[in-house]
Amino acid sequence: MDARTVGLDALPWQQSYATLPERLYKRVGPRPAPAPGWIRLNHAVARSLRIDPASLAGPDGLAVLAGNRVPAAAEPLAQAYAGHQFGHFVPQLGDGRALLLGELTDSTGIRRDVQLKGSGPTPFSRGGDGRAPIGPVIREYLGSEALAGLGVATTRALAAVTTGGTVYRWQPEPGGVLARVAASHLRVGTFEYAAARGDDAGVRALADYALDLHYPDRAGAEHPYQALLQGVAEATADLVADWMLVGFIHGVMNTDNLAIAGETLDYGPFGFMDAFDPATVYSSIDTQGRYAYDQQPVMAEWNLARLAEALLPLLGTGREQALARAHEALACFRPRFEARHQAGLRARIGLAEGRDGDDALVNDLLRRMAEQGADWTLTFRRLSELPSGTAEADGPVRRLFQDPAAFDGWAASWRQRLAAEVRSDARRRTAMRAVSPAYTLRNHLAQWAVDAATERLDFAPMGQLLQVLAEPYADHPGWEHLAQPPRPEARVTRTFCGT
Ligand code: AMP
Ligand code: MG
Image (cartoon, rainbow, N blue to C red):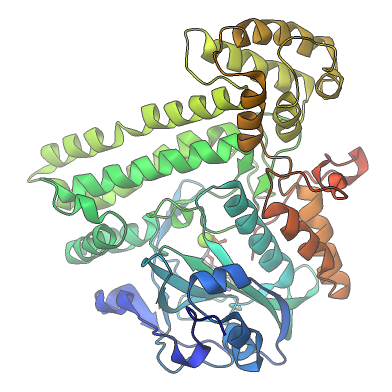
C-alpha cells in the first residue's frame, strides 16, 4: 500500500455542508444496487484523495461506489438547489439522483466533495427514479477526464460502476453510478434556492461557506460578498474562455449547472466540436440554440447576473447601493474573458507577444475556418507543424479547408507576422504543440465507447480513449485514428441529457 494513502475504512470523511442550515439539504442514504460490477476505477484521482486504490478496487470499494455500503464515518446528504432552466426559474430542483457522500482532503490540502450520481431517489427526485443509465455515466466520466487532460477546470471522475439493475428510458438500459469529485457542488442555483424563499440568512450562510471554501483570500475584503461575486465571475470567465479554446460546448448552461468554484459541472448533452461552426449546438433539447458554442460567454454572464440577484441583500444597504456593487463586480467578466480567449488564440497561432493587428489575424483565420468547415482541433495542431519560412509543407492544413486556397491567403499574412517574432521556429512550434491538442473527446468517439458499453458491457473503447485523453497534447503512435474527425456517416450531431 502507498505510504501516503489509506484504506477505505480509515478514511477521514467530513461533512462540512451539514454545518449549513438544515433547510438547505436532506440527509439521505443511497438505495442499494442489485448486483454491482466494475466499469472503471480512476487510480490517479483515488490517490489524489489519499485513498489506497487497492482498497477501493476490492469488494468493499465496489459496494461503497455502488451505494450498497456507506463508509462508517460518512453522513450522506442530498443538496437543495433551484435554477433557471433555459431561462425559466424552477424554485426546487436539488440532488434528485445524486448524493454527497462526504468530503475528503486531497493531497494538496484542499477539501473535495465525493458525490455518487445515479445512487437512487432522494426527497428531491420529483417523481424521477434517481438512477442513471451507464451511457450518461460513461459520457460524464470521459468528458470530465478529457477536460482535465486538456488542463480545463472540471469535476473529476473517481469511478464508474454498473448497478446490475435496469433503467427505463427510451428503452431498457443497464444502470450505473458515477462517483465524482468536485471542489464543491455549490451552484448558482444553490443561492437562488435560498433567495427565492426570502431566506437572507440562508444566502448569507452559503456565501460565507463559499468564501471560506473557494475564495478565502477575499473573505477579509472591505465588501466580502461583492468580492465573492467578482471571484465567481473571474473564475467563470476563465473557464468559459478555456472551453472555447478546446472547442467544448457544455450544452446545458442552466444556473443549476454553473459551479461557484469555476469548475465544469454536470455533463449532459455536451460535445467537442469537429468542424468549426460558432453556432454549433449538440443538445437535442436546445432547439433555440441558447447554449450554442458562441453563446457560452453571454449565457455565463446571464447566469452570473442571477447569482448577483440572489446575493443582493448582502451586497449593500439599500437596493441602489447593492445594485451598484453587483454591476461593479460583474463588469470584470467581459474583459477577463476576452483577454484570456484572445491570448489563448494568439498562442495557438504561435505569437509570443501581442501586437496591433494580432486579433484581426486570429479572427480572419476563425472566419475562414468557419466558412470552410475546417476541423477545430486539427487546424491548430497541424499549424504547429508548419515552418515559418516556406509554404511547401502546408498540405495537411490546407486539406482541412473545403477550398484549400482559403488557407493560403491567411497563411501568407501569418508568415509575415511570424517574421516579426523573436522566438526561434523550433521553440514556437514546441509552444504551439503545448497549447494545441491532438486529441479531444469527439462525439463519435464518445458514442463508440457508449455503444460498446451499452450493447455488450464492453468497456475497452472507454479505456482506450482515456489513455489518449489523459495526455492529449502528446502524439500517441498507433492511435492516430482517435485524432481524426468522423467520417460523414459517423458524425454525431445530437447529444442527449443525462436523465
Ligand atoms: P440535470 O439534467 O442533471 O441538470 O438535472 C436537472 C434536475 O433533474 C436535477 O434536480 C436532477 O437531480 C433531476 N434529475 C435528473 N434526472 C433524474 C432522475 N433520473 N431522477 C430524479 N431526478 C433527476
Ligand atoms: Mg444538473
